[in-house]
Image 1 (cartoon, rainbow, N blue to C red):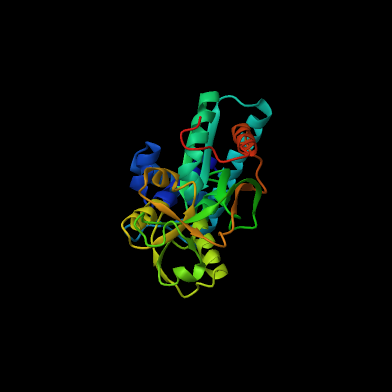
Image 2 (cartoon, rainbow, N blue to C red):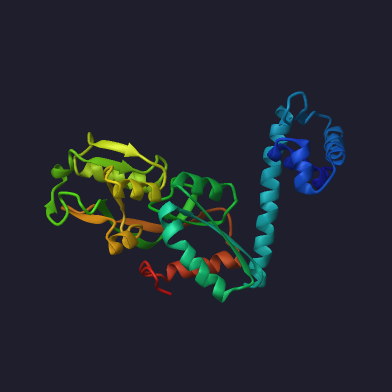
Length: 301
């Protein structure tokens, strides 16, 4: 019969890339970790770890076992979540994800309010681009995520919660500020683009196609904050969510160009895996998202 304790130790060796790192993570001695893995190999009659290189890498048999181990322990976590769901909302954890726009400008405020109402729930937030958030959601590292736009996977069930209006922003001294602007007038501008894989980048690309600006000069930068800084320094213009630039517009460090037609609004959605039930804390936060109705203003409580 498979020893689950040894299986967990073996998986940590693979995930950490070595026996020493796994021993440190598990608060065990390296010889003890090595011995547990060898006993697992003996019980299965197969080598699981290649020890010839500098790092511990899985053999072909080890790759297969590691994949099943990940699925097994993920299922165990889901079983615990299902039991807690029956028990009701109390002590627990809420670890969610958000794409850069919502993860930076919306979710921290909502998590703060949630934590005030449920102080015994430990909260955490992962922020990345759409592909990164979807990957963690599908791997089970998070159970609930908020995306700007449709999630990039058919395995994610999602529901709309808000809308988001993109605006073209520029430095306040730009020659076109204060006048109606046609897309053709932007043909000679440099467009600051988010990195590929982000929801904002997909929105930006779609807007340039709709405005017949496929050949416009573009400059790619990682993250919304970097793009805003580049625009403020006069490097170009950018199409960003109005919520991400509200503070800069208010303090006069960025300006909005009055472009007609306006770019299409995008939908903010809550996403979760189709095959995993949400824990009570996750269900409670989803209820918060469903009840928003509008994007909270800066400084609102």
